[in-house]
Image (tube, rainbow over all chains, first blue to last red):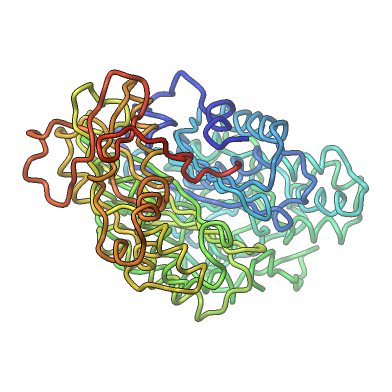
Length: 306
Length: 306
């Protein structure tokens, strides 16, 4: 299929969204930013064979590529507005592209996120890069660096589902709920916005709770203690895995795309779907407790280039 | 090398640039857009083996990845401000990354373009996606759709050098000037800004003059006539290639990253480095003349997914 025809048929939707003066079809998009807000910009790539199996449903690939970026937008407390897409295809069929576009817009439409530009290329493996621009009130961005000693450590949703889902996919023992949690992560946009001026620091959990919480604590120049028994776990995870495995998924599994944040219990009271799991401390370390005993956890999380 | 260490060492430069509230290192960049301007956003990908040979100097890969995006910014008449980078590496050495970063910042620094965020992943081939945000006065963007019957058709610089350089690279007969024109295209940012409110329409020449001029004419719902003898050619191209070959490179070669634009001769008088090559007509076709005879040219240019 011809590149220009491909774009016209599946990605160029009219009418354009709010703030989009010129969308897809010129050398660049022309956008009207809010005159009194700051912008948040994020970019993330998914590579076939690295971030998803080659035979993944293209709608799921696209959904996930948008969702992982929305998760970064959520972790800053911003409202998503515009997206660009760089899509490298490997002899994709028109059916494949159509399914991909459906997943892309499903994820985007849920958050009034407009696709404003893109580039399609060919290469040996499918590679999807999404760049999202969001907006928020000046000076309100949720940073990693604001955690204070005495703050409570919270997470959204349940932990470990996505990595458990991936493990089951790879063993060919799929569990519908857990696999969905891997393929279609829920970006916590609404919660991120509720946390503005309430949480002291936030990060999204992409590499695993311990690894990402450590980044937040390090940026805030503090330490922390978490209680493993307090980690929120889904029924599906608990039914399928024993204590040790589910704790490992929840602590280091990665791909959750939940938020981890710090703040006072009073400030965040009334915000739904969050769980207190520990406390910010003055020590530079992150300590894990289980049944009130300090335990060691293999906590490297998932990192590229290991 | 560890991903976080890689970013810190080669890509995270302080102090941050103008308008960058929070740069690399959090979940997203926080940016302060100009309250009275519009933004232009562009994204483009280069894939190893498709857009550059695998043994290309990493500094040249990075320079080119930035330059091709700057070229789109130039074609809109915008001033570049912020860039995000999605870099997929295939077991790159630290030396490779260091060279890549040097080429990236060389291209960016020439235009006060700040790297504000990015993502590094691993994959089977090097894939570089750059997203650039620029700014311009509201309502001033140079679109493809403004060409009017009677306008003159212009191009910047010289045509055909890049594709000739690539052909020589592939035949292992490198010519320093022509190969540089392929590896390190000159984004016409200054000219693009001069053309604001003077040119009627503009596009950058990435796929070849004929293919890209046709896109401009089609968007403007007009036709055109160009005179092949008027195409600006470099001395290096003329010394190395005969009439037929150099005309083919100039007409359909691609990778020039010069601007093609329309406007009245009076409006653009005094702008340096531009050449009139033809006229916008009411006919829906693009006609090429050589020695005043109409000639047929294989004009598909370079398209993906052929």
